[in-house]
Image 1 (cartoon, one colour):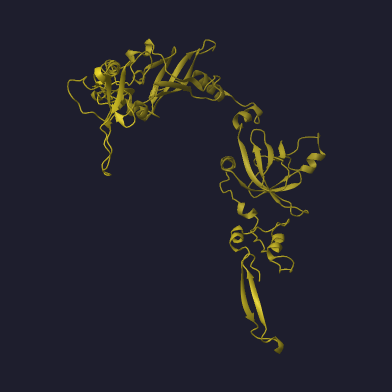
Image 2: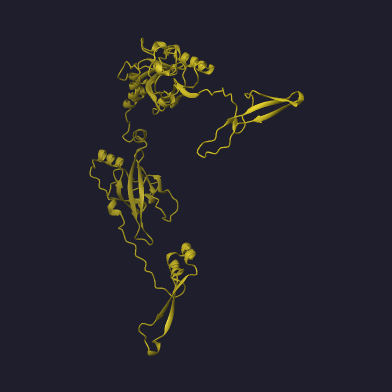
Length: 502
């Protein structure tokens, strides 16, 4: 109370246009009234005064600390002043992670932690260097199955994939036909706990540890060795082989695989017993349906044929595909869909059945006795077959059919008659433009010629905007007057730019 404050500044007018304006300090004075009206001014401390626009305090001791981001051993850290508490905590965390069996490079340490100075090498984070890199192994499992009467075990084959980015493992089982086991995915991608069977004993003695992640209870790439078991949740998978990239990776990290060749996978007694039983199987009759089903199941001969029906009214040549099933000598004929053919969506002309050679006698003698049916010996390229009265010409076949005919019947020279059945190319006749009728414009007449439902011609919008209402006028006379009275006549010739009319 009883005090007044005054602001003073030594700010001078800025007269030099090339000199940048400067910020001048702000001074705060307290003015007090003395006896007999005398007053005294005392300058106050301006450190606690907020910065005003265009001014700043005289004392500016605060300085921002330099903060930057950095990667140390694959971890993101904040590098600040060495004496800052954050830097000390970060340094202790990273050095503690590298003090174990990691064998980290000196360039990854914080400044001041090494006695000898080493030149820093360019550092690549782990998520960049190990991205899309995977180690592949082959293994097998001898699984006990007491329910089997003779052997009591099965041999299962697996593929092991080790991902270097996050040290996860994925195991999938190879699929075998008619194995009787639910094969496929065995273990989803995850980290596998490290058990005693595949612990430090599986690492060669004296080998240097160079893993990017310490062995903190999970399986790493150092624990997977060819010829040694890998325990995955209690099941010991015997590793027998790996790919070339995996061998090069182990060699670069000074832990090469001891075996350069793949180990032998024992045979599965279940498949061996099945194979021996199939070899001992003998046919009681020459044409056993069961044996034909086992030998020719899912084996089909494919022929390309054509039905020429141009003798009938509205007839045409139509392509078809003939399938002959070797397991039971049945035939089916499928339609070949053509774009815009105008026909119904029928997939087959003839469903799968035995096709009689003589259709008329076979239909008349229904139930009287067996009839003759088409077999693979009757189907030849270039010959015709009768499909219930319709003549079909076979003009080509696929590669499997050629191999079957060559192996069984010795037909090596099978012609390709595709060019013979092709319809010769006929050039489309050119449409003649009729002369104008004098009714309407020429564009209107051409619209009725180009489409069944005529449409009005499109106007040229650019021409409409530029030449609307514009015309050219000329003065003209007859060059050669047909009559004496026409000489000397004058005409005005007008040309409208919008519609090209005269």
